[in-house]
Image (cartoon, rainbow, N blue to C red; front, side, top):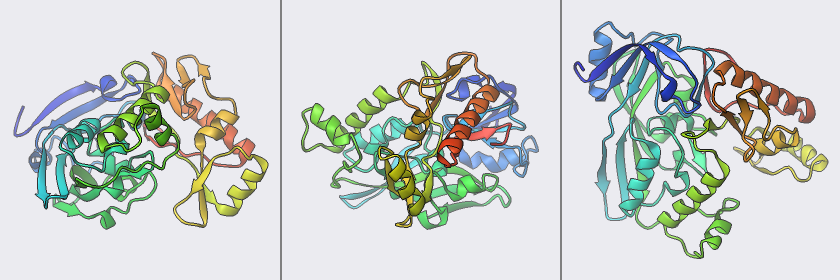
Length: 348
């Protein structure tokens, strides 16, 4: 431990990615305090401008198709505090290293609404705005008050509002330009009085099954947790990174033609009235991939979007399977699938 960070040579990353892929990094820097970043980079041990530098959160949204090509940086601070409270509207500040689900449950325990639909998503707070995580009708961009970042080129610490983050579906300025920023903390705008968002398919049915008609935010979160546990494998039991593919967004005319040919294909409004979001899970399932297994690389039998590591799969094997799945969807439906996770060591 030195000056707020620890260094590990030839670091094993197997337990630092939820696929459980065997991978190594030439150097791992664990930073306990974001204020130590300038000292770390000034030491010369890690170069902030190194394009191979990988910032790693919970490892729940990446696939190691090979070893990390350069040093790996992990922010481990886990501070959470209320920085503004007018009695109803509350701003919560959380360090990048806070486990995401822990933050959700902590804010709910304080009587704060806003993050309940995002319960049980794996990963860390720092990764949430990068991916613009979303579930059950809510995206994290709707709750972000500000994102604190370290700019690698200048060494400056900045505070970006939602507009500057350029959020889009499973996307952000941070994801589009991963070499520019290091997310060090996020502030969330929450409320003590807002009603939970319950319009997403299946959520009201789950609450009804629980005997709840007017749910609190905590009860809405419990419904989300129940659904996710049924549908998605636990990474601690079966290696996975959650949904591997984004739901494709296509022009409305293209979506209408597909729906005419395949009436059961679910679709939703896209980023505008001119586009539609298609169900990637339905497309993949229609191509017969659900439950498929090739060695230890496979597709979950419960959810066609989830690629799984049955034990000894390599990242290259999982990537090859993902490419085969995307190729079959393209061939049958003329729709291109894109991966959600970041792929390290290979191109899509």
